[in-house]
Length: 213
Image (cartoon, rainbow, N blue to C red; front, side, top):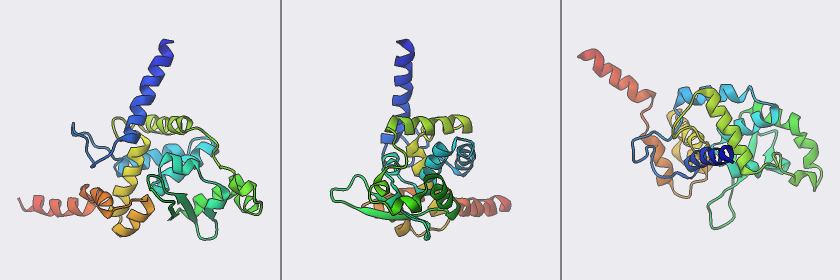
């Protein structure tokens, strides 16, 4: 009984990060997004998981999507040749579908693992979820990744991975309107919070100042 209570407590703390919203920092000053180093470590650990878990985690990391959105993916969601996945955007009053590009190697491995092209030719199989899991299972997969990568605190959750995607894409020079669409934000002001993170360019400017002192 005590173990079950402790497990529920840990799960609650982990999923609380998924529900957290607002800026990049919490009221206590804790950072809510994965920085570049943490994201790289997380991706490295994802590659060590069994294939189904690895592909789920990598799809989450490279798309910036929400856990429930990735769990809803079916063979019909993919355009293999173009390297595109289509998500049903959550938190919208009306039905909204957004297309997000994925690394071509990831799409190729997903195709090989789930035989996506063949399934797309069958009206029934094309609508079968690739990962028929409950959200709790998906969260456990991500928690395992964070633990292995040595990531702790508020960033160590699915929401932290999504925030890290937003910060990383803007720092890489992706136009903010594209990041907005990829993340499924209704308002660009929501996406703009990710521009508040200090990026490599700011570090370079600061270094010039330091050298002059």
